Amino acid sequence: MGALDAGCCFEDELDDGYLEVAAEEIGCESGVGSGSDSARAIEDAVRVLLQGLGEDHEREGLRRTPHRVAKAFREGTRGYKQKVKDIVQGALFPEAGLDPVIGHAGGAGGLVVVRDINLFSYCESCLLPFSIQCHVGYVPLGQRVVGLSKLSRVADVFARRLQDPQRLANEICSALQSSIKPAGVAVALQCWHIQFPEALECTSNLQHLSKLDRQGWVKVSASSTSGVFTEEESSVWDDFLALLKLRGVDIEAGDMNRSHVPSWCPVQSLETPLCNGHCTKSSKVGKNSSKTHAAMVAAVASILHSLGEDPLRKELVGTPYRYVQWLMNFKSSNLDLRLNGIILREVSSSSVTDGNVTQLNEILSVLNIPFCSQCEHHLLPFHGVVHIGYLDKQEGKCIEGSILRSMVHSFACKLQVQERLTRTIAEAVYSVFNSGAMVVVEARHICMISRGIEKVGSNTATIAVLGQFSTDPIVKHLFLQTIANST
Image (cartoon, rainbow, N blue to C red; front, side, top):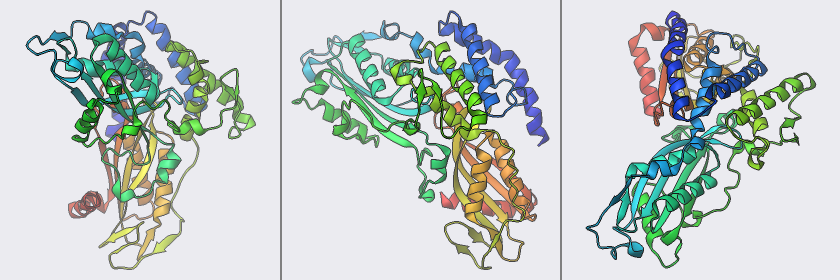
């Protein structure tokens, strides 16, 4: 606990030194002339949002949050400042040894596909980052090929803007067609959008979470084609799909060139009564908080303006309201959740599994509880599962699995860090069963994936142990093995 607290001071030292310099360098790379003014405007808006969430932006852990959020937004939208021609220029290479009449439509060597390009973009309907796997194919023409890395870099230019899946596919396809002038281009996207925390809480089939922990996320496919890929008599589109299937990617032919992806953003279903585009009044907002809510909506609109966007653009009307509604899921509250006095359920002394609670010897456990929380350092979601184990010293009683799931949901729905969340859950369970409690949290942090570090596929695990779990390595090992067996 002391080590965790000490980390805050060390973090501030880093932020005030190297990270500050790094942020300035990013602003220069992006070509932002008034980058400092833009960053300050976003930081001011973030302070309004934190205040609206009932937080003190000067407390430890939040003092540098406005700076980090401004940096993340500017990094995530740097594509507005980049030009495709600057990337592709000088990356076209001659292949004079190839017969120009060989290949599709006189292409210089057939189909080229770059698969599994991992990207992140910001949803223009709610400002939440969404995950993308991008697959790009093209048919070379004129005895020239393009450097393969340029395909992913062009895709990244358009992902680093406020987007929706279909427009993103169209823009990547059009840019490649006009810049490298091939016989044709195909772009296929698989996109995942996070749900509201309530939707993740109700996720079913918990024993079969997907490999990327995207259970409960909205998933859509979008694609766009040009040139020979659009010709009915050509087999090149089928070849493209076949090469994707070799990687386990299955996109139906009917997905090609869809003009609209219905129900893409789960937040878009919210009713957004509007006045002048962004002043809203919701039935969920009481009279006492409507002024604060309006200030938060206006702050998000100012963030859009600072990024160079028009908050009144048709696709962005309602976006500030939806983003605020997302943040309000993590509003600070004075809820003091205590488990002392809850009704404990009777269990037999033998090993039992009822779908909620598993008892192994004296260890009871509830595994794979889904959660979604909001990183207080970057105001970006992190999500995953919680595993809870405790020792039964209460004469054959246990905590209802539904109560533990509600407890996880309550602790997660606030600005959090994973370490604190893990420790808080363990302390709450230990308050009932003083003999021992152990909590393991596995999570994916959007701030680790969508920001500068871009460690796609990274997963963070934290452990908190109390009582006998901290002194008995055999008991700890048994619980860890139970988690491993469940996954």
